[in-house]
Amino acid sequence: MDIRPILSALRRHKTASSLIILEIALSCAILCNAVFLIHTRLQLMERVTGLAENDVVRLQVANPGTDDNAPALAEEDLAALRALPGVKAAAAANSIPLGMTGRSLDIKLRPEQPPLFEASYYMGDAQLLDAMGLNLVAGRRFTPDELIDWKALDAPNSKLGMPVAIVTRGMAERLFPGQNAVGKSIYAWDDTPTTIVGVVDHLAQPHGHNDPASYDFSVLLPVKGAFPNYIVRVADPSRRAEVLKQATDALKRTAPSRLILKQETVEEMRDSYYRSDVEMAWLLVIVCIALLVITAFGIVGLASFWVQQRTGQIGVRRALGATRTQILRYFQTENFLLATFGIALGMLLAYAVNQLLMAKYELPRLPLMYLPIGAVVLWMLGQIAVWGPARRAAAIPPAVATRSV
Image 1 (tube, rainbow, N blue to C red):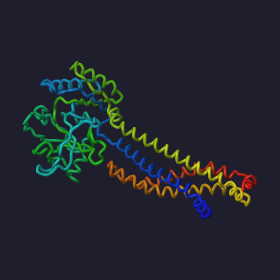
Image 2 (spheres, helix red, strand yellow):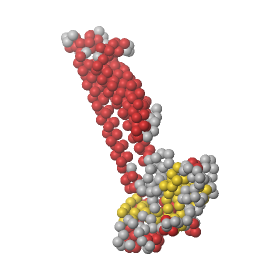
Image 3 (cartoon, rainbow, N blue to C red):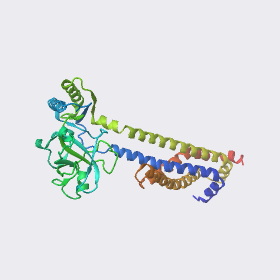
Image 4 (spheres, rainbow, N blue to C red):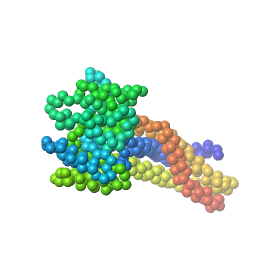
């Protein structure tokens, strides 16, 4: 089809054409960035924690270490939990992935150098690795003789260091690229070296889990004490609810007046942790749908207006032998051209919006793949939206149309 008559007609309707082009451009820019943000959030929510998520439950208690009897109570708690039927391992820990609260250490290779990065640390006894269900890919677990008492470690002017640690694979690669990290030393707790005795596949930070650069930089430390989180790994995932109730009852028996703040599975923790991300993703989905609906109505309205304005022109073309298919193709081609102009402008706007988001919110750069996706969606939307008005134009009888000339 010769597009010169179509371009000529569009030039005679510059205002209407410019408005629909601008509407399509804004839709393209917002749609590309919104879909990118949704995909980014979904990727964050799919990240592994390192935990055996189907097997692990967490109980969080209030003020676990406020008196001198707290360490003994913690040992009594662990003995009771480990004795429960269906429990594979149990440990007390200062924190847990997706727990939202935790602390970090500055990691160095030499005591005099500036910190290379921060890593979250998890404290627990020899069963902590098994209770979390972590995958040990190199080295070994902690031995009982390596455990340090938390009260002694946290005492004023304590000279205790941290002789050994287990780190994540990502952290080991960052510190010792292409090398075996087991047996090498880092400086984290103080100016005394800490020897890496093991490497686990993954262990996400309890906080900052949305940081793509360091979410997996974590350290396991062999420290026993009265910590707020009891991590229990069950032998049969289908019995998690039952074991969780039994564990809660066991803790209440050892200390009836104790307040248990949380009793949850890792799946429930994940849902809670990512609730705001899910809400934002759904909000963006609604925005995208609303934007596409508004754009479609704009195309339908403009096409219907032009059909009404060109009734005589359409009738003349029908009288001269134009078929319904040719009339239909005319309006489809016209819409395709308008959409193409709008998409071209929208791609430039999409990158401008992305640059603004990168500067203000530290978001990643918009990948090129999202531009053709947005273009195809808007081209299809335009063709679907213009189909109704175009069919009405093609259905105008030549005799009726020519009477309006």
